[in-house]
Image: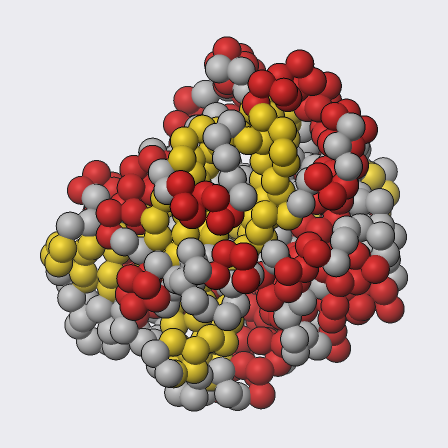
Length: 139
Length: 482
């Protein structure tokens, strides 16, 4: 399983898995966009380079998801493919290439707008040999 | 929640429950609820983000006054419960991100008309189609205003005034908008470039989720005198617009979540949920966040002002009404943080999914409504009722002049999608004479009326406890969803 949604009465919980932290973050991004559209319909035509910084990996996960939401609005794009690398000096630094195309409500089956990733239920760990990250997304 | 705190609850009077104060709580919790709502809340206690735990967590924040309060529409939020009110001492207390949320100043604006339900009926379908075409809603849409950094800074300072000067409304609208549509003290330099950039094309858009534009009619009058003062009459057509500060608000929230996380550590504030990040209100960090929030509030006022203008244009085209024949009724927010005076004390009042509900006489209320009390606009669900209440003296005494804001969800979006499909909801509501125009079928299923509490019951609790009293009940005829 790459990701799953968990229940929250008002908003939407996402939990993503991966062999590595990077892979889990990539799957988290997919889950985030799956709230908003059918990601299988979003063609990875245009690439964008993004970065995010944080003091720990949990916070980096939130920074990453929120950076994607910012770029969604600024570029008016949905994204469907994500390539993440994470390095650590004083802080954790995430660098990513994300691919997608301009939003097309009909083609992409637009669903619900995600407003922001929150710190509520923010957690990470290992399950069945995979790393996982989770949080509640405000919708 | 803080480990080892065992929750004790008792009903102190009908529909008012108290969570006993225990360390590290600084005040008790108070919930306005009936037995079914309380049983529902208790059934969720095992989840770490249960609303009851969130009430307790807020009760432990520094400087909180009287009680950590939840209204009858209470349900889990992030950090704060939705329907939550937390008032903090302006000198000793904090300002917290979770008490405002990402959709800063989300609220409801109502317009009045002189039309009746019967007069609208022959044009209802046409009106629905035209509104659906003219109101930018859902994902991937833009508003007609095109702003740059300089212009958006003006929106953040002037709020509704800026867009009225641009032709999106009339001066009289300001009188009937909370804060006259412009909160003083907003500082655009405290709002990131990214937040402004996200908003360049989003002023005057509705958004998605639970946001809506509804054409409604007055179905029942409970208080003739108050209804008359409000200019409301039986079968009258009114319009209700529910939305907030859009992407700008979301980005301010995002930016300050990180900023306040550091402030929380710097000032050594113990929080039980990481989302409750906060800063002492008087600290530089607290004041900076408050300035940014005010900018977000002004953006939301401007947003609803533009949507009201677009709505009026559609009413003029389809029904031949003049602009002045569609006056403002009122605009009031329910995701907000304000410096207010209560019982002679300056307080930082956070309302997260709670409507300000000032009682009679307060100077903040428009003169025409002041004797009755402030109109409280409570949105129901698509297909059920909404209500207009008035603020009361009891509300001023007990809840810092606050009431519920909606029906309040009772079921997760995932469950709602499994239970209903958008198409069948459309058909069911159509049989009741309600036209729903939505951009997302899945979104409609998530917003199914059955996913919410019974709004009549939620309102009755407010009314019976005297926190806010019923004036009229309205029912939907047309609903535009994102």
